[in-house]
Length: 182
Image 1: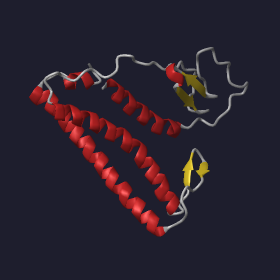
Image 2: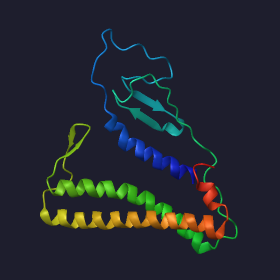
Image 3: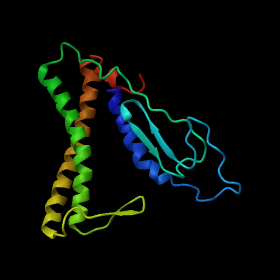
Image 4: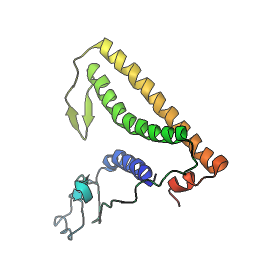
């Protein structure tokens, strides 16, 4: 479950990092050289295990920073042996639903805005429309996006309730295994 927390943190960082922007100022003598293994104000790419990459845009950092990608081989901890099969299935399916919704919602939103002929701008670059302008299509996609967003919210609430159930009622170690402070 620690991987889920890492994914959640990476999602937050990926949303907030572009908002950091940069100072926009320049140094008189140019930027100092960046030591090996570090990323500076000019940005760059860090490659880790399994060719996972983190791209740091220029101006996102103001100081030389060491960034590394680590891969845990531990995987998710096993569920308790006495946990009922329907509960194990619910845990597995809820995580699949989380990942599916994290992919589907932005794609639906992009399609919805394209159908409304609304410009989608990312990092100052206008993305091309992926669907033709259509008020009917926009309405269908808007309704689907709203419904899935509510499902996503409900899934978060149910997930939190299940975590509390494991912590307070079953006391089976599942909550402790997924808590980030363990």
